[in-house]
Amino acid sequence: MDWGQLWTIASAPDNVPIVALLFLVPFFTWLGFRQARANDRLAETLEGDTALAKTHHRKTWPWKPHWTKEVHVWPFLLRVEFLATIIVTVLLFVWSITLNAPLEEPSNPNLTMNPSKAPWYFLGLQEMLVYFDPWIAGVVMPTLIIIGLMAFPYVDSNPLGVGYYTWKQRKVAVSAFCWGFLMWIALIFIGTFIRGPGWVWFWPGTTWDHNAAVYEVNRDLPVLFGIKTQPWQAVFGLVVVGAFYVIAGLVIHLVITWSKFEKKIFERTTMLQYLVFQFFAISILLSMPVKLLIRQVFRIKYVLLTPWFNI
Amino acid sequence: MESDKPAKTESKATGSELEVVGSGFKANIKDELDLLKKKSSKENIREELENLKDPTRTQIYKSIFRVKHEPTPRSRSLGVLTNVFLHLHPAKINRDATRFSYTWGMGGITFYLFIVLTFTGILLMFYYHPTKGQAYRDILYLESDVPFGKLLRNMHRWAAHLMVITTWLHMFRVVLTGSYKTPREFNWCVGVLLLVLTLLLSFTGYLLPDDQLGFWAVTVGTNMARGTPGLGHEGPFGPQLGMTPYNDVRFALLGGSIVDANALLRSYIWHCIAIPVIASVLMAIHFWRVRKDGGISGPAPITLTSEMKSPGARAVKQSVK
Ligand code: HEM
Image (cartoon, rainbow over all chains, first blue to last red; front, side, top):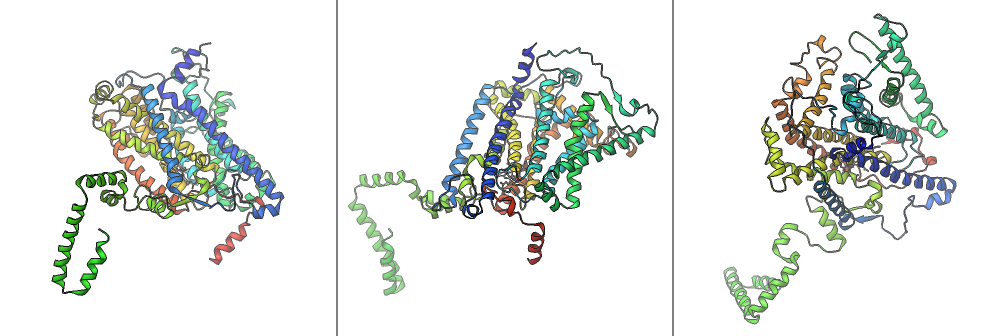
């Protein structure tokens, strides 16, 4: 075991943010879900007690009738903001004094960096290059993610949970986003800590071997099924991809209509909202892990082969 | 001085105008002289010093801030509303909205980091030339010779990384609190654009030191553009549409077919001018919309599942309007 290798990666100044992220994301997830749980409990109590529901101020924080509902921004908000800027400033000074920004040799097109990694926040995309061709990983996926994010508020037809943390009232929306967020961070994590020279998979605790010969078996699904000529490869691939969309769509449909409450929300959803949600959920949230699995576990590179592009 | 005023207006009411002005003027001077005689110069100086202790009473202070700073509701409201930097805030907010646990302060911290980056970035620009050869030397010069140059560069770098993190966490918070829902859908979209711009800012900055790290990161990044469907020379239907390495979208990004001097200059201009300007405009819209959409979404009183209005009710309400 060579933990020195892991330490070299983790302690590289440019990777400090990812290490920080490994603590920050769980912390804020905890902070959010703790409040969600408290609110959900309160909701449960009030559902069972209609008399209390009429008089309760509906928050988990203390409140007394003679308290004003609003406070002055000056000083109550401004002092918090002021404090936050001071803390951030101090943090930046400490960070900048203790760690130096990296500077490598002058750029040299004739000397390839190996591994040559994108900045950490783009490592998710770079890691996707393993599972998809560049036009999907580098162009289509980012575009889909941006449009999908923008569409998110418009396809969420659940009117509950505006302005407070909750889990029970918004299970679908919250889990859809968290799933995507988690995947994004997981891909960055793989790209940073696991990928070594030649973008080869090195488990933490192993040493980067610059001469690691990779016997990548690149099998294509149609070929596995003995289909070796066009246009049958394309037809076969289209059928498989189509089947994937249908099955994934059914699974998602089951999930978002699981409970009685979920069904109620589903009734409010228009056809367009439903289809858009399905499209992005399948194309981003499901296709990514499925492609990762069939690549890593079954060593299958392409599912759909056409003369112009492969998926 | 205040006490003079009624006396003046009184005399104005009686005699003819010239006389009044003349006599008023004389009386004024006489008063001033009397005052001076009464007080020793020592006392005068002491009074001036007393005034300094409470700068809010000086003419200079009043000319800048326009309102007195007192712990009264009126003064506190005006203090926010009459200040160009603070007036993005309302005068009053939801008493629970000041809690860290609701917003995590992430939007505000992101904005503060943007300010820090602008400040340190402008300082860096004084020492940086976006030309091949010189760029790398400028970084070495910054690191070794410029007073606090290393600190400056480090701070710009780490603040940029931190801003990416805080933007993600801000978005995460907005999702968990359902703050993207009506009427804030559009502001969420502005936010998504800000997220993209934040990432692009970081990415364009990466090339500027012109070292191996940036060079290869940008090479890897822009190589993906080759595959753009229809617009890249290696993308689906790209070659069929006449794309070559010398006219495709990657060429447009780099100003050439390889990452070289033109790419450096383009990065520099996107990084230092174009994207910051676009991001500033979007931030202005973002903050404006936070206010116009009714301020921060919460912490709001919770709604019960049983109180959910039927979709029919909403349609009826809209048609009544
Ligand atoms: C440069 C990046 C950004 C800056 C400087 C910024 C700044 C802010 C600030 C100061 C607020 C006030 C509330 C708070 O502090 O949480 C806010 C609210 C908001 N932001 Fe951002 N933001 C940025 C990016 C984003 C992103 C990426 C999204 C989502 C995709 C987003 C969506 C929103 C929404 C929906 C609100 C209203 C939240 C509410 O009413 O509770 N913003 N933003």
